[in-house]
Length: 145
Image (cartoon, rainbow, N blue to C red):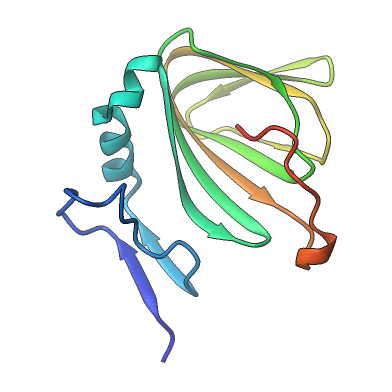
């Protein structure tokens, strides 16, 4: 029987220091609950907080909360990635273009593309990051979000 992890329980007292398994065959994640938790942590005072929700050798899902006007300066990764707006309004600049990411919009970027983000209003984004299939072929992250 496959192990199924669920990140939907209500007890959050020890969740960040002792996270649920992040690389099980099946994961169910309550994004609203995770986002609420990010906004209650001390790091939120900086204007930005993030949590890796899924972590495999070749695949990650990261939830990021941003306060209005928060910028993430230009950076790049050696992986393919998508950025989807869950709430709010974000601008993503890459390759001389500006992508207007309102709720429900997603942009996919190939490896090595320098990009930056700016939250127009308080926002939440979901980043999906994928590396080559084998660990030996996986490039290093130059600068993760």
